[in-house]
Amino acid sequence: MFGAFRERLSESKDAFTAVFTNVNLRHVQISWASSITAYWVFSVALALYAYDKGGASAVGLVGLLRMLPSVVAAPFAATLGDRYSRQLVILVVNIARTVAIILAAAAALAGFPAMVVYLLAAVVGLLQSVFRPTQAALLPVLARSPEELTAANLVLTTIEGVGIFLGPAIGGLLLVVVSAEWVFVVSAAGFLVSALVLVLVKAPREAKPLAPQASFAREGLAGFTTIASDPRLRLIVSLYGAQTLVAGALNVLIVVSALELLDLGKSGIGFLNSAVGVGALLGGIAALALLARARLASDFAIGLLLWGIPILLIGVFPQAPVAIVLLGIVGVGSTLVDVAGLTLLQRAVPDEVLTRVLGVVQSVFVATLGLGAIIAPVLISAFGVRGALIATGALLPALAAIFWRRLVALDEAAPAPIQELELLREIPLFRPLPSPVLDQLASSLVPLKALPGEDVVREGEPGDRFYVIRSGEVDVSSAERSVATLGPGGYFGEIALLRDVPRTATVTAKTDVELYALERDEFLSAVTGHAASAEAADAVVATRLAGLRPGVASL
Image (cartoon, rainbow, N blue to C red; front, side):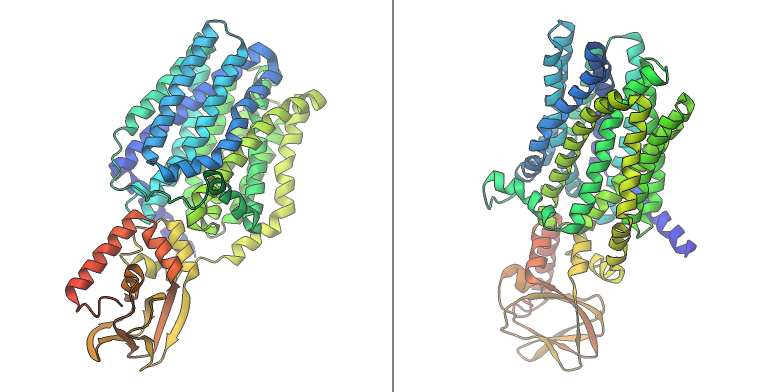
């Protein structure tokens, strides 16, 4: 068992390393590094600016203003990423963030009311909610294989951990020598660099634009209805929202703890946030091992525990060195929750609504972050800083305990169809598909058997299924003439589905045959919905048309 785990871990590390050979993905990674670092530099400076203007309540108000507009925007932002060039969308977002932060710095330096700065910060938060789902949707266009896509997500998560460390550290050091207003300018420069790097991305293909089936509003609401109809999604999204609620409260608690509880001064705000970032970076190593496990829901629950318990313990043991170590553990929990939670969602959500569901999840994150930021001052007022830390930290362990059995049941109810996945990965039509799509296809395969002499498909029949041979051999004939023999790993039925024509050949079992069948709608949705897969399908069709008689080509 340990040997298999070590082998899976080695494969995960190889895929992680291979991502850096993809030039386009490398540019996205550099852009993301600059963007996420700039975001946290701005966040630290803004928190101090707000605290100087109005104390803990002002910090909470800024958090709410930054998050609230995004609650409405995020589900619809996912639709924008399907209707327009995703690369162009995130490029425009970064330019807009640069302009908004420069205006905020100018307003602060000119002595404008603090609310002007807060509203411009709200614009930055709104743009962030557009950026993240769209960037996630761009990755399948740039990745060269399903494994590379999975590894790219992990690389970006690791970069985020580094950014959460570097951004607050840079912000904290800058605040020692310059005012918050000038730190705003530094963060704006970071967003501009991110935009310039994105110009270098040359997408080899673009995803097919979304063909509107309803109003823009109804398309955006599809993510909500999908989550509402699936108990698994409701559970994961609800617990994920609880974690971001605690994260929102922690953003305020870190500021107040640094200044009032731990006596670390202004720079301590950055140092405490950096501790979370260091932990998130170490959590990336843990995530590599996570890829080698099939217990994602259990790991999700463990991540919730690692998020909550350390915050509680800071309230019990309010010493600066202890707090730094405990916040590092929070960072580890953050990475575990992100990797396990998002993977669970990707596996459970149909591909045709996945982007919009992730947009809803982003909306939930934003809402709960803002709500946590507004609740924290109330807790501080009621229980003091230490009591607020204990109350905040206790929430997630309590929820993990309540829902532990249901989370474990998710692991036990959804075993990975390893053999089916391996078969699909060897088929050129499916090889370019993202891993979540392959997971869904593998789970949708229908096992069939055929005895020697039994026809699987017949000439003249409508094409309703695609077939993959697991074992045995079949004979392909047209006009009662044998033209081909297919064995394990062979497939047939794709051209009749893609060209919408009747079968013009018969496939008959030569031996005992085990097959997997994929229904027409699921096949077409996967193959035609992804540009690289559609290109591969065209190549297969061309090859078979060139090598077989026209009558056989419509199998």
